[in-house]
Image (cartoon, rainbow, N blue to C red):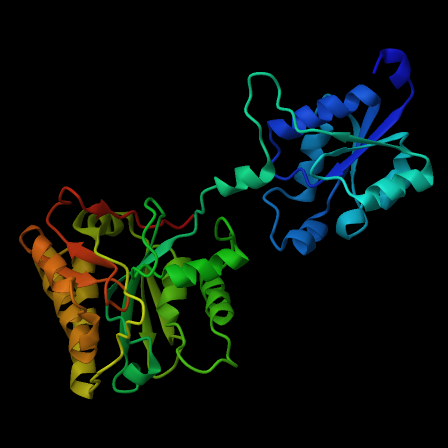
Length: 388
């Protein structure tokens, strides 16, 4: 199109423009060849309804960025809903030309333009010379999820009422940064983390951490479903930063939560804990088969957790290792099916490099958490999430 053809013409495009990238800029550049370019931007509400997800950038931020692009004459947030949310924006800008990408066109949009005497133009996706093709869908697939994982350190299983009804006590967990892609069904609370991703796809919001944990616990556990309820220690371990202990006394939610954010203690703990992979818990494995829960065994579990917490506060490595291993033995005494075939061989492989060990989560496979004097080669260090 020559300059004469585009003189005084108005061009309209519409889209989400979330995660703005070079493909969007190339599209704006080519569309602007048809005249002065006006952009309608999908609202946060519309994108949430259409794509069942929150936006990465708010509508105000997206409007600011699009308006700053030199090919754009003006832009606005579309006030409608659904795939045709731009109708009022078209009435506002009164374009002569409506431009779409080849994958964004539709017969409905074409008919809409024909009824209003608007020229309808379809462009193929063409990246700028020397740049690779970009799309939001492809770009989104490369965005890393920053939601934490959870490690359980001692006392866990006490968060199940059928255990704590025999004796109240503490579970100790830590929220750890996703510095490694840990396997699914590996005791790192990945099922609860996957539930969290449905609410917060990329990271936890800046909000009261205990309230986030409550929201996640309620979201994951439908009260109308019968059967297993995921322990609250999973949601707390993911959402509550630092090192935590939570007290259970026959209820699903703990009576109280205590946290440690002291940098010296957290750094000490990081230098003496590491993770090693085994194998995912096998399909059909039930770690509660053959469970044997007695007040005496629950007392062993809760007393070991108390000693573990005190040893961490004192930064006493030998006492920590002993209490840590005692807590694991108390777990497996109540739930012998945690020790599935192959687990003992993995423990034996690390026995001479570690002071103590336990399976993360409910066991049956997954990862081993080791207490060590120094991190051995082949093990994965942990990074405890600090409070912002």
